[in-house]
Each structure stands twice: as structure tokens, then as C-alpha cells.
Amino acid sequence: FNFGDVFMHQAIHTIEYCLGCVSNTASYLRLWALSLAHAQLSEVLWGMVLHVGLHMDSDYGSLLLVPAFAFFAVLTVAILLVMEGLSAFLHALRLHW
Image 1: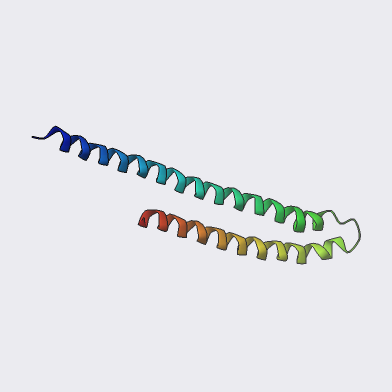
Image 2: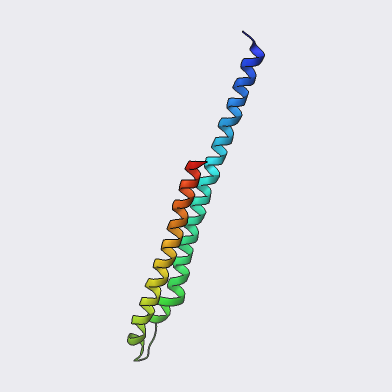
């Protein structure tokens, strides 16, 4: 029985555990940042596209609302697919490494 070997072995395991904790925390913070970016992009899209279409006072406002909603829906789905695909990729990458 060599106390120095046991101490070094335990120190290495402790360092590996701490590095794993930091890595997992950083990974989840990255996913949280991606989620916040998704929410902010949705808010910007609402304000720039559909909010403008809903506040038209002219007679053409109701006619403009349909293409504005279609544009909003297409951009929202496109952003949703890209962001969720990126989120799934990051989850898989986190689990792989």
C-alpha cells in the first residue's frame, strides 16, 4: 500500500470530476443562450412584421394583413427550424463529448 499513489489517483479523479461539472455547466449555459436568442428573434419578428400589419388604419390594412401574416409565419417557422435544429445538434454534441 502506497499512500502517494492513492492520493495522486484520487486527485486525478477529483480534477476530472470538476472539469466535467464545469463542462456540463458551460454546455447548458450555451443552450440557454440559444433559447434566449430564439425568444428575442421571435419578439423582433413580431415587432417588425406582424405588429406593423395589425396597426394599419387604411382600408388596405386588412388586405395587407394576410401577406404580413404569411411572411411572419414563414420566417417564424424557418427560424424555429434552424434554432431547434441547432439546439438538437448542440445536445447531441454535448452528449457525444
